[in-house]
Image (cartoon, rainbow, N blue to C red):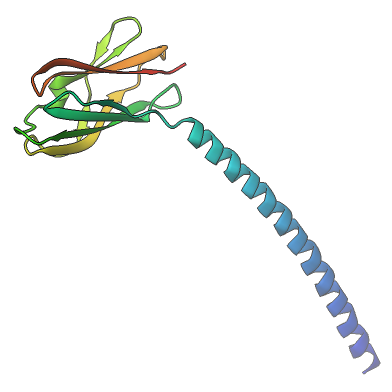
Length: 157
């Protein structure tokens, strides 16, 4: 009986010490995880790209890079077309091109969006990344809404 009280006291003290240090280390790890998440959120915020808008009638076009730059293998652009007259019947794989700072042009590999038609189209254009990464890229859209060419430019470096 004497030893039982002694063993219970030792177990209680040992448990207290274990949970104290385990909790301390978990809290320390949680603080480190929070710091890393804040740093990643800051990096993601820095990589947000500006939306460019061309509102020449009869079609308004908004382009926002989703993935662009030297850290990605494919470049993605969100594309939004709006019109109140006519139909948006253009083939995005042929109407759109991407030009680099040296004048080279590239065609998109994928249009991830609705088929031609309607007054509103929204989707994602995907291009293979350009290597080496140019100083800027210019997305060009030809003959949409009767406008010979619309241009959207982003500096990468």
